[in-house]
View 1 (spheres, rainbow, N blue to C red):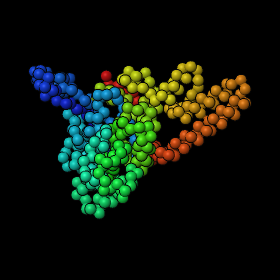
View 2: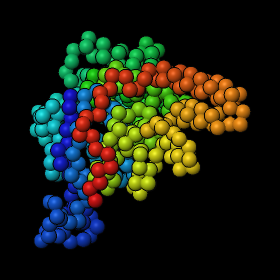
View 3: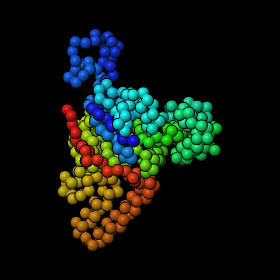
View 4: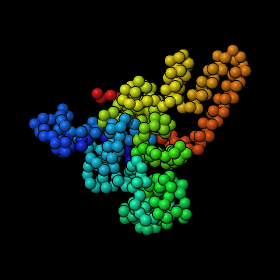
Length: 352
C-alpha cells in the first residue's frame, strides 16, 4: 500500500482554544493560508509518500507535529487542508478509512497502557474479532502474532496481561496490532522507557518485521536508531517538512539539524569533527564499527612503525567488522528487501 500526503495541513481549532483561554474569537481575519489566525497549526503543507516496503523514520523536536502526522496515516484524524490517500483512495471517506484501519497498524507510545482484556489471548484477539473473522482464523492470527513477538501463547495465553512484566506487556500490545496483519506498521517511540537490553531486543524485533516485507514508519528521538534502521528520514519542524532523504543526506548538515533542536548520530558527529581536524573519512554515514575500522586504518598508515601498526590495525579492523556482522545477523538485516528512495527524495527542504 502506498500512503500519500498531499499538501496536508492540520489545525487544532483556534476558536475553541481561544474560548478556553477566555479570549474573543477573531472571525474578521484569516491566516495567510486558510484558518483562523489564532489556530494552533500542528501540520503545515506536508507532502510526502510512504512507499511499499520502506522503513521511514520520523524525527523532530517535541511539538513538531510527529504524533499528529502519524494519526493521519490510518484516518484517526483528517486534514484541515489537503488530503491523505491510500493507493489513491481518500481517507476522508468513511469506507476508505474503515478499510485502511485494518491495513495500517498504529502503535502508540507506551502501548501497554492500552491493554484491557482479562486474558492475553483475548487482548490479542480483539482486533481480528472486531474484523468479524471466524474463530479459526482469529486463533491462527493470535498464535502467529504471539510467535512473531517471541511469546509462548500456551504458557501465558490464559494469564492476565497485567500480571506480566513491562516488556512482556509491550510485546502483547504489539501482538494485538500484528494480529490484524497490517501492511504498514506505524510506531510512536516504540522503545521509550525500556531498559537497554529490552530496548535492543525491541529494535531487533522491529527490524525483523521490516525484513519480512512490512512497511514501517517509526517516530523516534534517537538519531542513532533512525540512522541504523531507516531507508529515509523525515524531519519535522513546527509542523513543516524540514528535511526528507536518506540518513546520509539528512545527517550531512549537522549545523542545520542543531538549529531545529536535533543532532546527528554520535559516530557521524565525531566523524565530522575528525574530518575538520584533517582525517580522510570517505563514507557518507558512519556507525561505531565503520568509524573504528576507517580510523584504525588511517592511524596505522601514519604511524612511525607503519608495518607493525598496520598489522595491529588490520587485526582490530577485522575484529570490528566481525562484530558488526554479528550484530547485523542478530537483527536479521533491517535493510533487507527495502526499496531505494525514490528520485523525488528531497534533503534539506526548508519551507520557512
